[in-house]
Image (cartoon, rainbow, N blue to C red; front, side, top):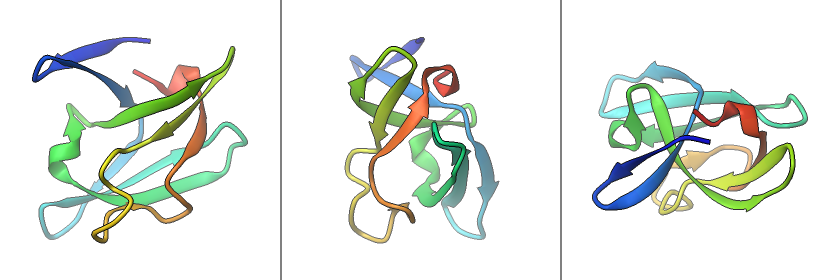
Length: 92
């Protein structure tokens, strides 16, 4: 897993499909570790070079449980719940 330093803290980034919306928001789409489609709406500021800033809650040998902190309310977040298992290879 690669991380970048942002404001003196390590940030994990998720490879995902990004569709700009008419506002300062984007639609995010990716597949979880069971190959189910996951989508949600986030502010553009949560992207870095087309990758979504994520937080890893738990890591296993081949997958990670992820979330996006601060996005569980206020109209932003994933439509299918706030935490998702992804394949480690989907982390940039």
